[in-house]
Length: 389
Image 1 (spheres, rainbow, N blue to C red):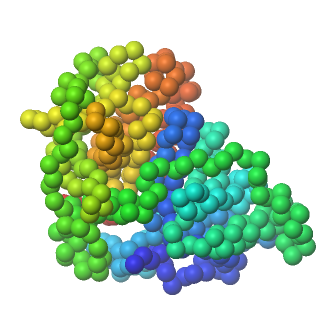
Image 2: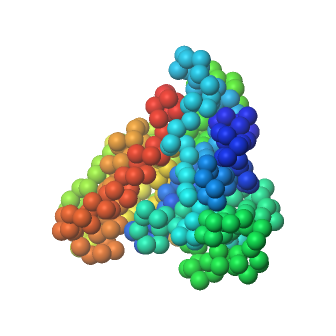
């Protein structure tokens, strides 16, 4: 169903850049468990991970490359109206590359859920920040272990500048990094069913374009507008008074429907407002002109996840009767999503630190903004990849 850009080149570039091993399907996340607590961001919804050689002896790279639906790259070329090689469409935002060094603390984990996870440090981020590749369920434990073993051999060669064939089993144990903290969970989006449901939102909203591009052959459930769940109590109908509004933006509101296992449209135009409502208390209110759909405190525990590929924000909410639901806001463009993301980030940071955003030192504020800004610039889809309605 999916293809890498330049699928004909399983070996990248010259023979010095040979791909040694690959896991062809999975999701890439960046997890920041400390800033703010529990925050994670989906970088590539569909991707492949591999170890490849460089043009320098004993030097290797860990590479995560975005995966496209079959025919998508060719379609993009046709839409540009140019006869270009598919490989020429590839750009830095479609690939993450890391020098395979022991400083990454590259390691793996099989969770109770059965998820097989590869994790490594984000050396340009804050303490505790991790990249995580959550393998597709089709990947076997032995395949993942073999991938980790190859990565250990490459780290050995880089450290000692000699072939890994000279290494003993005990020599390679130093690259297992058992002393590292447990790998934190990435996000509620690790479920393939839930991830596909996000894809279905984009497919449904762009069904006109999809129908004219038969090469995509998307599989999705036709969109249905459903009645929003009844939220009793003060949550939605009696929100706290806003002392300061951090952001108020227009978005589409979707709710996860477990029966067809996809996000269903609730309202195609709502106002999502993030505001301060008390001392270190913040509120997210979602309503239309004539109806209040949802009100909830802004806390790290509602598992906020931003997906820049589909301009969406997913979070969990417990209604007054104890019912848990996953909600999705989809924004019209990247600037709107960025504005909303910064408001959520600011509210969570202030609540956790009990310090006003404006009282932070300039250096600290710049760091927090840059940490999110790096993802915004690198991982947002280009205009060619966004399907206009």
